[in-house]
Length: 109
Image (tube, rainbow, N blue to C red):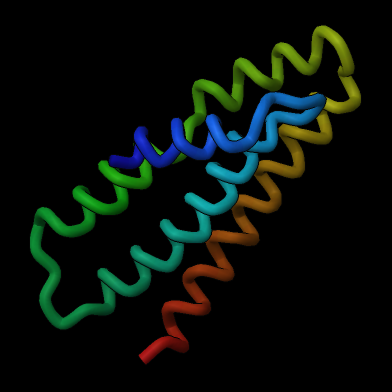
């Protein structure tokens, strides 16, 4: 299901000078991971299937580290500064998004 969501987003957002589809997938996936982990771990009843199913399975197939690395290498060949900006902004915004998702989950009823 996550891979289908990723493919759908990649189909809607055409390739450009910046790998927007992967950038959006990874940053939004980090936000959702922060949110879901906080909610699921704080739930009264967490099964041994819930966290792996949603966090590892769904979000693990939605986000993509391998494509992220390939896109950094491709950008680096043509525009090294863009590759550095892409790598840095993806990691920083991913961490900020995961933190924001976790904080939102703590405040949600």
